[in-house]
Image (tube, rainbow, N blue to C red; front, side, top):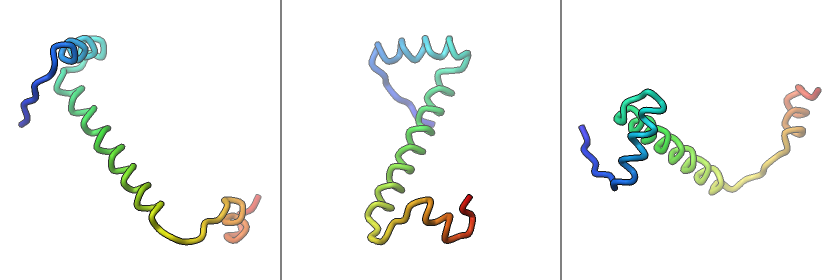
Length: 70
């Protein structure tokens, strides 16, 4: 369980969105946190990939190499 304190404006916006979406505020917050964490994980994966040194190839070249050019 987690308790958070929101600024009044943010709390009001969350309440409006919860009513509009017909979801609880807790559900909206859980979904937002899950999305944020997924995006942060994706971002870290991209950074890790960019740190790798090596050759890159075009999609066309890879398709030719694999014999799926078409």
